Image: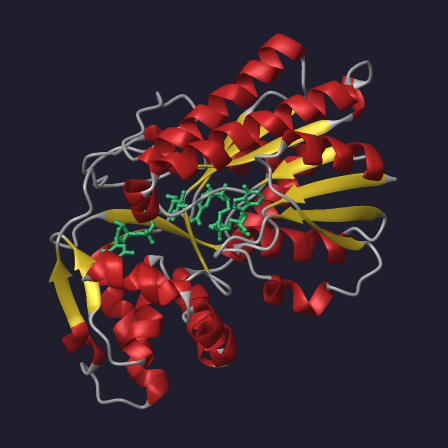
Length: 348
Ligand code: NAD
Ligand code: DAU
């Protein structure tokens, strides 16, 4: 029996990974370990919370002792590690929390895994989920490959780069059986509305300004979150130990064009006159250290593991908008309380 610890399973991507693993692998015990920060929400997993192979554990990866007890009590055999502070803008106002969770928390997990699995390392796996932001920024040409040198610019990407280095160090030094993936920007249901796409959906719905940083020419490579969860499943089961896989959407968009497309879709869905929501676009002060362009070369995972995105951007965006419009309670719950304070500080 595999006892799989998925960290950060109450967050955006983690909840999609947990759902997929619980549904597709009834012979695995899935332990969702999450601190439930502002970004963690058990509502995200309502539909599977009563499944027999699903278990929730509220814990903080910064607390090594607590993690060690969990490993021992539940005989953890594998880790899929997603827990992180994940928002670049928050890392600019509070870098320390990013070091504590993303670096110290990751090293705690690695250490506990190494100590509990020593003597039988080959029957255990530690899969670390990371980001394309570790590679820094591209100009108008080129792509990030698995060989691109690390060059992070924000406290968030620096903390993720550091955690990737520690994962490799535990492979090289201790023989821990590790896998790493670096993925581009995700979008889809349950996305916390501090990030560009859900923030714009929320603001369009409520006729609020759509804040575009700088000139809006910054470019991201967008991937539907369920395709990312499927890539994680494939890498976890078929990836070669010690290797890194880049995951991307083959789908680059400048922010301004993406927001205009979203306005078009929302006008249609809300029965508003064409061009109505675009008027909400407001150019605001740029993000410090803003990376110009990310673009992933995902040919390795395609060639070696047969993975490709399955959802087109138009389909994925429409599904996403439909989900947000029919889950108003979810959106209202997460945009009250601390979200309002965050929004005020970030945009005023
Ligand atoms: P998220 O912010 O939506 O969720 C993070 C989850 O981690 C939350 O449930 C939170 O409660 C939990 N968490 C935070 N600190 C914790 C701690 N100290 N102990 C235990 N749990 C803690 O993040 P996301 O967007 O779902 O990203 C998940 C992972 O994927 C992150 O590692 C991120 O770096 C990576 N990633 C994200 C994207 C993206 O576009 N969102 C792209 C590539 C990689
Ligand atoms: O590339 C992968 C990364 O994608 C993940 O590692 C991060 O966890 C995830 O948050 C995301 O980072 P970004 O900074 O790219 O995502 P965000 O949605 O914050 O911003 C996307 C782009 O939109 C970026 O160029 C900044 C811009 N932006 C963002 C916000 C929130 C705006 O113009 N206005 C905004 O209000």
